[in-house]
Amino acid sequence: MVKACILSVSGPELTPGEAALFRTENPWGVILMGRSCVSRMQVRALVADIWQATGRETLIFIDQEGGRVARLKAPEWPLFPRGSDYAAIYEADPDRGREATWLGHRLIASELASLSIHADCAPVVDLPVPGAHDIIGDRAFGSDPASIADLADAALSGLAAGGVAGVIKHIPGHGRAFADSHYELPRVTAGDNELSKDFDAFARVAHAPMAMTAHISYDAFDPGKAATVSRIMIQDVIRGRIGFYGLLMTDDLGMKALGGTLTERADASIAAGCDVLLHCSGFLRDAGEILGEMTEVAKAAPVLKGKAETRAAAADAIAKKLEPFEAAKGWRRFHELFPPAGAMA
Image 1 (tube, rainbow, N blue to C red):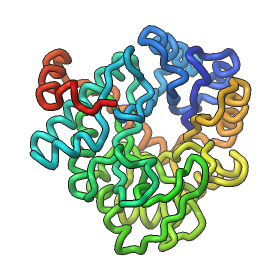
Image 2 (image 1 turned 90 degrees about the vertical axis):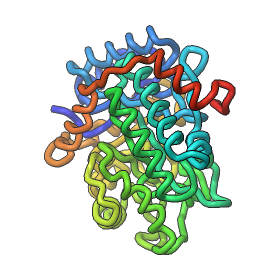
Image 3 (image 1 turned 120 degrees about the horizontal axis):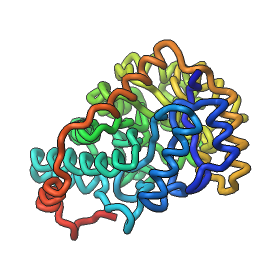
Image 4 (image 1 turned 90 degrees about the horizontal axis):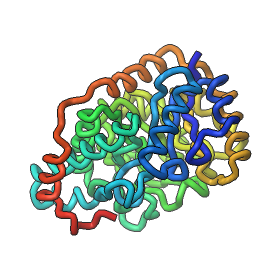
C-alpha cells in the first residue's frame, strides 16, 4: 500500500523515527531539501536508507532548477544557469538557446541520476510581470508564453533523456503574485484575458509528466481560495482549459499561504483534485517537529489509486529510460554555448 504523498528528511541521515514513518506509511515519493545534501557519498547512502525503509525504489525528488534554487550546492556539485540566462541566449539565437537549455538539463539529469534521484521539481513555466514579487523573477525562461514554453519543453526533454522526470511549476501561474506564498496567500487580480497568457505557457507543455500547483488565489475564477485547494482552478482551469492530465502535486503544504491544520490542507487538496500531497517542512529545523508534521500529512494522505496511481506510474517509468550520453563531451559543448564565466549563481 503506497500513500499519495511526498515527504522529506530532516537532515543528512534518515532518523529512526523517519525510517519508521516511511516503513509504516510508505510515501510514494521523498524529496531531498538542501539540509539533506552534503556530499555525493552521503546522498547515495541516504537514498539507500530510504529505499530500505520503504522496501522499494521510491522515487526521489529534488528542487534543482539552477541559479538560486538548487539543493545541490557548489563546490560539491556544479553550478547551473538561471532560467533568465537561458532566455538571454534564446533571445539572440533561439536554436542556440534551445540547445543550451536541453544540454544544461541533460547535465543536471546526469548529476541527479548518479545519486539515484529521478525527479526534478523543474522547469519553472511561470510568466513574470513587471512589479511582481521576485519569488519567480530570474527563475523564469523569459517573459512571453511561446518562448517560456519552448525552453521549458527543451528542459523537460533534457531531463527525461537522463532518466529524470520533470515537474512543471507553478500551475496555473505564479508570475503575477505580489507576495511570497511561503508567508502569505498571494491574490492575483488580473482578468481572464491577461491570465490566458499564463495559462497558454502551461498549455504548451501540458504533456509534462508532473506539475506542481500554485498556492495563489485568482479573483477572476475563485476569489480567496488558493488554486491548490480550489476545485474550480484544478478541474476547470488546470485539467480543462490548460489540458494538463499528468500527475498533479501540491506545492509544499507547510507554506503559510494555506490556512488551517495540515490535515485540513491535505483533505482540501485531495478534494479539489490534486493527486499527491507534498510536504517539505521548509520552515522547520527541529527533527522532531519535522517528523510530527510529516506524520500528520502521511496519515491524512489517501492510498495512491485510480487515475492518480496511473499518472504516478507514468512518472516512475521515466526513471527507467536512460539514453546514452557522454558527460565530458556534453560539458565541453555546454561551455561553448555558455562559458563558465557566465552568470551561474
